[in-house]
Amino acid sequence: MAAGKGTRMKSALPKVLHRLGGRALLAHVMDCAAQLSARQAVVITGHGAMQVEAACAGRTGAAAGLGLKFARQEPQLGTGHAVQQALPFLDDDGITLVLSGDVPLTQATTLRALLAECDGQRLALLTLSMADPTGYGRIVRAGSQASAQVRAIVEHKDASEAERAIQEIYSGIMAVPTRLLRRWLARLDNKNAQNEYYLTDIVKFAVEGGVAVVAHQITDAAQVAGVNSPVQLAELERVYQQRLATTLMEQGVRLADPARLDVRGTLECGQDVEIDVNCVFEGQVSLGQGVRVGANCVIANAVIEAGAVIHPFTHIDGEKLGVQVGEGALVGPFARLRPGARLGAEVHIGNFVEVKNSTLARGAKANHLAYLGDATVGERVNYGAGSITANYDGANKHRTVIEADVHIGSNCVLVAPVTIGEGGTVGGGSTITKDVPAGALSVARGKQVNQANWSRPAKQAKA
Ligand code: UD1
Ligand code: CA
Image 1 (cartoon, rainbow, N blue to C red):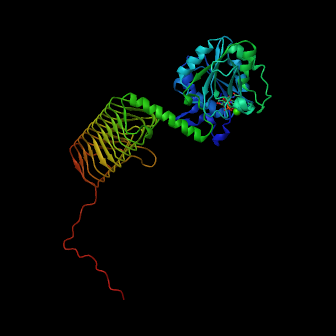
Image 2: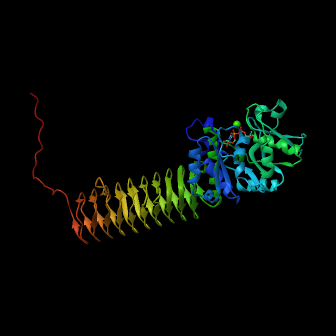
């Protein structure tokens, strides 16, 4: 179910597209469902349907494997009405698992257990006991014992004082034999406090019809927690990040502070990885064995190979082209690696150095205040402080080739396209517009003039 408006988010974006851990809420639900080898998935859309459907269709992850269908619910008349819209897509010999697009942290093992309880013949409800059940549907049982037969779900707004005292709540997730679901949904009405067609009313139909209703109760509240407001979204984000940090530490990753790590995508780590505080990882990031990441780094879509050190305040974003940092390379502090930066082993990139769409071979160094864009840099090249590749002529990008063992002095401009031959030296302050032959020294700047015994102008006395 992903048709609701999500009014309390106070956002133009449909609620189920808000992000948690870098992925849309709905994407979490879809990825979880994809682990269940379902025959198909039907996404019920309504509010912002076009946007939600486009987001689902554009997904490439695990959910791409689901036979995905969309059922439009217009207008949105309640959860029962929502599921009614999906019926034409469902086969009677199957089990329908009802999930909410705004409940992102449910685990596949929990859903498998629920499906086992259903077993094609029972109505299985996922429930939880809460200290403050306000707002939720309550599980009403035939007696006061926890094991007493489930009789109904009563929505908070329709509940009596006594019913409101019940702490066991319905999570919004159920597994139900499709043939029975179809029969029961046909009987729903909207005679209730919200004038909605409640999916939860099918419980009393099951009881009337002698179909067993089982409540599968879990204790992990985060798995059934829904997102209704920015506050709840932020709370669940923290739960998600805390769990992810714990998993990483269990794998041996040493986090300076698990509360100050954010992973918005997937982070793979080799042995003996250390991550200091306030680091953000986005998209697909892999850190090889022994990699150290200093405080306050943002790293997206990058492969950092074994033994590399990323010093504090470094920003790496590979976007679509990716970034690669070779074994034992040193990057930062305050470095910026942009898409297509490929650093070989033992490369050094120092403070205020920007690298974009450039390959640096083993041992090349650019230690201070420099720009390398669209460049191919050979082994052991030393690229001086303040030097830049002028790769853009205002219309097109051009490449700079710096062959092995070249020494580029400080404050040079290499106007691309240009090649500096192997072992060449470029004098500081040069603007290089023509190729430099291998082994040559090139100096391209105004010649120094020394005027002996120069007397500086003296200040004139005011009249
Ligand atoms: C629902 C349950 C309640 C349960 C709670 C758990 C019903 C009647 N009540 O209440 O027992 O404790 O979830 O969170 O089912 N949606 C649609 N179309 C609609 C209405 C809702 O697609 O017409 C979707 C929403 O987008 C959302 C989900 O269904 O993903 C749940 O809707 P919501 O309004 O949040 O349900 P509650 O009233 O909280
Ligand atoms: Ca509602």
